[in-house]
Length: 277
Image 1 (cartoon, helix red, strand yellow):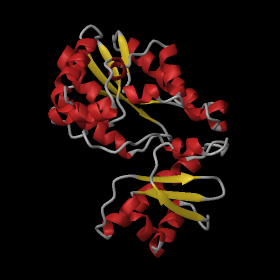
Image 2 (tube, helix red, strand yellow; image 1 turned 90 degrees about the horizontal axis):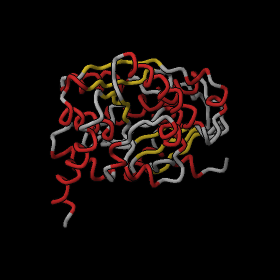
Image 3 (cartoon, helix red, strand yellow; image 1 turned 180 degrees about the vertical axis):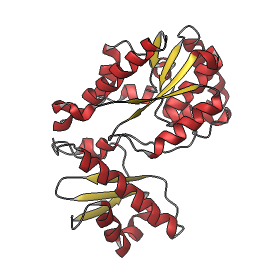
Image 4 (cartoon, one colour; image 1 turned 120 degrees about the vertical axis):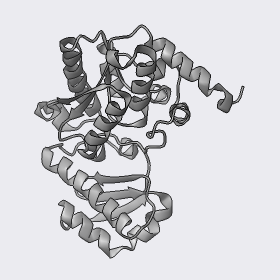
């Protein structure tokens, strides 16, 4: 059976898994994965038995919140903004390769409390089957320890299948680039604090604005804080142009990386996991 003809079977497996999960609170980042979980939950349970909850903290890009709220409202789902405080944790701030475990633990503890307050029986995340096959996912361990649902993973849906189902369902998130937390841009061993998170976020805003001003296409972008250097990763086709752009230095200076040596490289998801820790 071809992939094109099987997307409906995957969508049905997802709805079947969610049918007995409600009332359900969905950890909704606004990305493609959690958006599909939210939309499938609405189809399986009805909008009145689903709540979307989006974290607000210094670790999360602020630009995602408004879009997440609008998406939930279009589905007829109640949307909550929940505050998380991972920066209070010394383990999180130390930024070892277990940082995601401590971040996810904080998030899920807050969401489980919110679920109890609002009468939800379960919490679900957007972890997909590809995520589960990645040996380096400490955040998944935190979720499993707490009994949080991962319906995409349990339905065997990969990222490509998530996008295909989303496209068929008309979800505007179907081709949305991944947007992990801002701390994922900071090299392990470099302490995480609000100032570093803020300049990473501003850096990406400034670089995107540079591309938009010159009407150059850009899909993937990361501004990575390596401690003594900053590395800007963009689509491969844009690397040479950006490396020669005098405006990039000014953009990063405005963001707070004043005088920090910089490199430009092709975008690679999870690139910091490949650096020595």
